[in-house]
Amino acid sequence: MADKQISRRKLMRDAVVGAAGIAVGLSAAERAAAAKDLPGSKRKILNYNPDMEYRRLGKTNLWISAVCLGGHWKRMNVMKQDCDENRREVVGRCIEVGMNYIDITGIGELLKHRKALGERRDKMYLALSDTSHEPRNPNFRTAGKLLEALDATLKKTKLEYTDLWRITAYEPGGRHSFNTSCEIIAALEQAKKQGKTRFTGIASHDRQWLKFMVEYFPQLEVVLFPYTARTKKVPKGSIFDALENCDVGAFGIKPFASCSIFNGSSAPDDPCAKEDDRRARLAIRYILCNPYIIPIPGLISSHQVDNVAKAVKERRELDLAETKELKKIMDQTWARLPENYQWLKNWEYV
Image 1 (cartoon, rainbow, N blue to C red):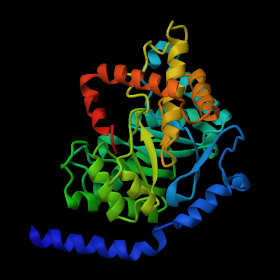
Image 2 (spheres, one colour):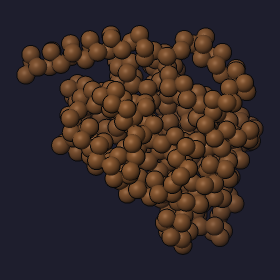
Image 3 (tube, helix red, strand yellow):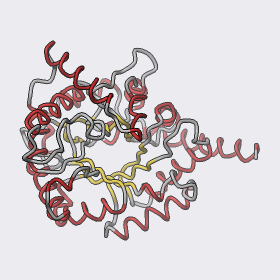
């Protein structure tokens, strides 16, 4: 077993060295220049809308809308709408406001959103992950099994490729062996070489493991992790230092803390609807103050799409009164987190 671990480590290290020359992306100076040149780069932006802000997604060199569509559709039952109709309406509105990325997990969500996109596939970058056939499942912790699962997912969704295959890894800290990490990277690399994904990524709730992966494997291009309106960058050893140094793009999941930030039901006629819209915009504005993160909330109506798009256009920095208000809101949010989301508190500092 020891020999296997050592040889595996050497194999992956050799791959890292070989890939380093083409995977490091732009220098810090070049990234800054690219950001300044954004207005002149409109022709490079998919589904460009002048009212939307766009951010460079690390060494992918894609320009992504500052807010995107997450695949989860919590509380959709309050819409009293057929699911297919709802997804078609929401996806369509996202395209209209200039969003250009949709992140989907689970085969059910994949099938629904693929149907909703229809012939508009060229308007949005598509990221996919079938979590039930990824390392959360012990049977899918080798490159071979992961690639088999990707093939099955592409076939079911009638896709020739995905823009981003972002493998969702096992959640609790310390559960990832080095071998499993190598298998994940090997699967991502192979899928990219085969043209089944344009870019490679991982998602996890394990902060230390994500930081290790970003720093150890230059093949990695994108990561996803929780980022709420209470998340703050630690002064030293932050994952954002690793992201900047390695030029890796980042999406923030759970921006509304699994809907715990809201007072109401999310129904259009809920008496708390106006206040909850304001809460959502405050959260998005706070998150966007970090230039290295792109939030991907789950949205269940065209109104919610318009509301987060409005947040992008509003003044970015919160004033003292808004800062005080958001702290109170997040105190309430933390107090009513469901038992199965208490782990979000571990992401207050990153």
